[in-house]
Length: 219
Image (cartoon, rainbow, N blue to C red; front, side, top):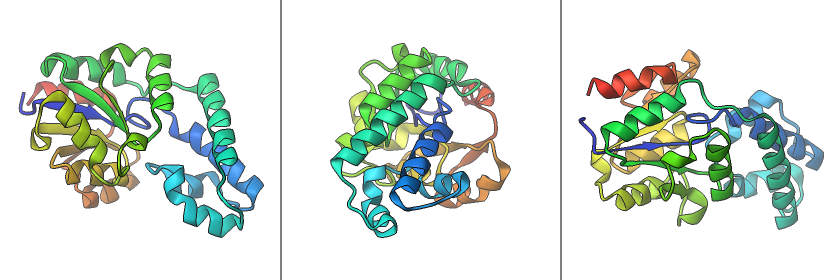
């Protein structure tokens, strides 16, 4: 195995959560005065923490981004995820192979809050592979695209960033992985997204998560 550890993003890589989360966000922003299509909301917010976009949200809605609003968002988001979350096809086998090849040195490093990440991993029966190795950008000095969450995961595993393989699906996440010194492979089910991921620094694109076990085994 060429890499000492494999670090997975969560949303869009292990679980198909982004359409659900962004659907709730789009609806709540429209209720507040910022109207976007689902595609526009996804393009703007995917890979980002909502709180980090406070200035833009307040500018478009003309209202302060309050803690009450954020708590309502979390509640509605969590309910949508509990009702409709599904695992990314092939993610279980990818995690199992990475876990075996690295002798357990895998982690989940997400820009989302810890409750959401652990709830999602539990819901799709992946949590057992990541117990004690879940890292949230909300708990770091900076979230993605800063490298903090990936550097924290690497430190916990006792591995240098340069010896890690990061699996991401957004330009924001790829940027974070590259900034941590890692090699980044981008899961890219939509060909039109490939150029942006490569521009951000992805070393490889793959279109199906089911391809990852073979790619890892071939290292």
